Length: 258
Length: 258
DNA sequence: GCGCGGATTGAACCGCAGTTTAATTTATGT
DNA sequence: ACATAAATTAAACTGCGGTTCAATCCGCGC
Image 1: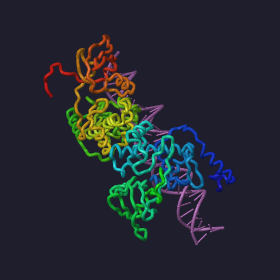
Image 2: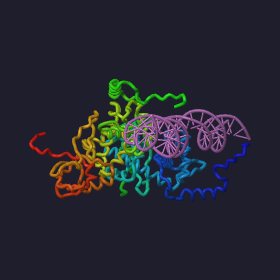
Image 3: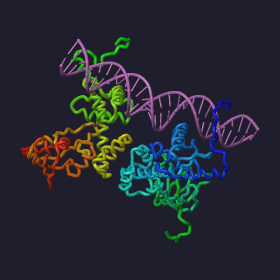
Image 4: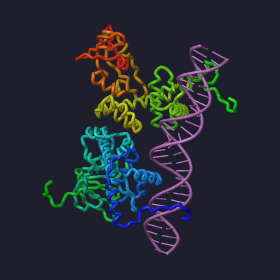
């Protein structure tokens, strides 16, 4: 650093307490959007939200998920920051209130679109994700609500993820990976957390889709496959796939209503 | 022209007969597309086809229709020509066989999309054109055929234009402008040739949509409005609008079957 | 034959979303 | 504490589809 350029420290050297307070303040500031968002910006926001459950998101991780190079991500992050949609911390990216709102809108639209494509057009659940990604940029609020109605007001996308409400509430989910269920557990498949068409096609062919009820009747040792009893037949499934299947288990103590 | 640059004449100075023969040859050469077409290229081809019924299309006219500047059109024409999709003549642009095939595919997709939007999603016919333009780039063959089936295999778009068959046949239409019908003529509205949402909304509110049968019972003098008798009521319509409404008239001599 | 106006072309630019390559900062493990 | 690995940032480029401004071409009327 011999030349005259002075580089400010990326994160100000202020007392930790004050820093946290200021950050909180910034993150909660909810402003109306002055400029409209490009489709790519929405896509980035949505992905940050999805990855961000529980903490900040790293730019490199985002690049991997979106399958673009890191410099592309960095430039977009600069743009999002200048719009007041994200906040950078030393541990990664956080959405501001405004950014979260926009992210939820994008996610709602994406999931409604997916539901529409399967329910109305009969497209397989392994294809809808990529298709919805292509269609997303062309769809506006009106069309989205139209599809929502025609699809029968779906509450979840075909992979089981909940559709946020129009006012930006994401119903919380209390599911666990199937891989962590114990022998004898009964339950229902809630979500299938993979986007790989091959995996989805295979799971679909086994009948392992959201809503399916099962009983876990065996686990092979040494991280071996699980044996599930479904309504009409048993299926064997590897732990690798089971990690992507999230389930809600019946409570052991029945009789609690609601 | 003092400098050394030599400009070749745009159209070769060869005998007229030979020129015509070569041109014909070029226009009929049907090659598989080596490179895939961008959405914008498809849009240009489709517009050239629509405008080109009966002769070559001028670049300036194309620019007006697509609402872009002339240099943008010219550059795209260079690209289309390099792909062998169009041929320039001294009187304007012609589609080659390959270009026409692509144009018809684009038009088919656009009109299926319009029919889907009105029939399945209940979008008003005054809005579907702009909407379909936005959605077009994201739609592929598979999705298009899916929509075709779900929309009930429509044969015409909401404005009455025929949907080309998958193998690229455009059903011919023998309609005339309503403005040229004579008093006493009975017939059916075939197409409404405007894209202006206001006009379409107004015509829709009058019940003047494709399929409506009518009898022309009066024309005011000095290019005045027409009076149409519909099933349940009469409507008055200005000549300006009537020029955009194309109709097929009943033959005066009934009894000819088929 | 000449000039004029509309049509065409060329050059230089913008914005967006991506790329590669290189420099620099930050984090981590011994 | 320091070397190295990982993450970030910067710089310069691509392709597409648009723009403006300027130059040139061509047909037509006088």
